[in-house]
Image (cartoon, rainbow, N blue to C red; front, side):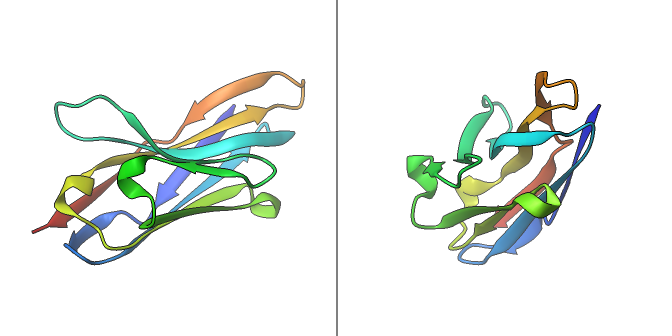
Length: 120
């Protein structure tokens, strides 16, 4: 099994910053893509940012220029720096990792989610 543990959520005023982190542990041979998704009340979960194993990134249009995703392959971790936060960024943020386990099987894994609340 693979565990993803997120940290760094919280309450911040509009225009402020937060940094989310996610560490993967368990049955891991290698990690392909890692990413962050979010889900606001009454809405579907959506992709925020994703980073491939080689480091290429992709962002939702709504966060381009404000959020930066990065990863530390040695620590099996992914981070998301969120600047210029807006009230519409309020959501539960979920870490996601596509993991190849020791048996070379690929699994899709989710963290438990961390709340980000941006006040106006």
